[in-house]
Image (cartoon, rainbow over all chains, first blue to last red; front, side, top):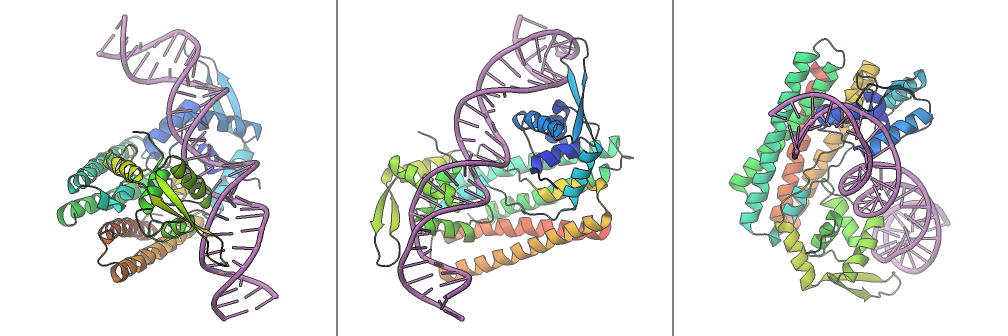
Length: 180
Length: 180
DNA sequence: CAGCTCATGTAAAAGGTTACATGATTCC
DNA sequence: GGAATCATGTAACCTTTTACATGAGCTG
């Protein structure tokens, strides 16, 4: 079976939900998947074109008065097959995050202690902000989609985000208190 | 001050250590920075060329018999200035890791439970392997470089790696036991 | 004598971001 | 009246990976 990149599979996956336009894909990405996947319009629209070319989805154009036309993409059975096949394949590349904060700290010898403290405090603020965002999304999913089959899995990914973020916050606190 | 990309700063930073050739940069990357930064030869050699062009480092070619010539790159004072300046700048992009495991789990509805379990077990194995690697590197740093000023910071980044990885492992265990 | 390590490098392709262009509606 | 939202899309650019090329010495 022909292979596509992960971005294509991510979009294919989102097309199984209510989100069926380029704009809606971007929205759900920024809201619900933001902690482990993000994507720009510069990828979304060309990828949707590819998906139609490959007959993984069909496009239906809805012209609403006033607003620009909306393209709705609906998965074909081939599209669903391709998605399911990808889901069954073992993971090839386990993620290694690129972390600019750690990169700077790695060369901390060339920085003043004051700047190091500032770096970690800023990082901690960002992590705190994220943690709160996850809780907000979690509540939104629990309130809105409690009978949706998807929500179980969405909550699992959020739990991951929360745990990782909490560990990172604890590292910040510990490092600021004891290690610099 | 002229801006370069993070890869350039990473290499600049490594050139402050004993590692001064393209090959040695790749080695330390794969060993000590691997948990938050990685890089390929396809980036290293062109970037080193750029660094010399920009007069951030000077190159000294050592021809050893038998082995191919070795290029040693030594930072200029301008190079050190550029590095220090970057270290002082606030972080622009806080990392968002792309996680294929979570992406697949997000669409878990289209996968069998059996495959979900396998996915998480494989991920856990990889995380366990990583955790062990961090401990090994930690020991190596403690034994070899205990009087090196850098080692303090290197251990801090390893502590981060360990904490994050441990949190991820705990999520795997919890999810496998209660949530699928 | 096969395979690994040391050592440098390039070219093509893939992947991704940013900036731009367009334009109506709705909210403050 | 200005800003945000809805909505689509492209082009240039930047970044990164992969595959290739070369070749000696050392290890089992």
